[in-house]
Length: 73
Image 1 (cartoon, rainbow, N blue to C red):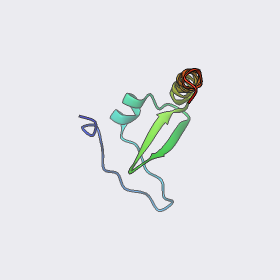
Image 2: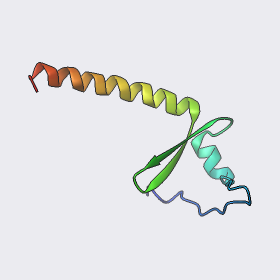
Image 3: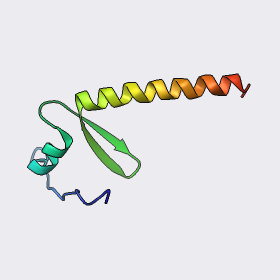
C-alpha cells in the first residue's frame, strides 16, 4: 500500500520533475516543499506539514532522552 500512490516521472532538460496532480493534492503541495532523502527513497512534503511533524518528533525525542537519563544510560 505504501507504494500504491507512486508515480514514475521524467526530468525535463533542466532536471526538474512535474509531480502529478493527484499526488500534489494528496500531499497538500501548494507552494513550498521539502525534499528528503531517506535510505533508498525520496519524500516530498509540504513545508508547513513537515515543520509541524518535525516539531512533534523533536518533542518525542526529547521525552525519550529524558527517560533514558532517568535510567542512568
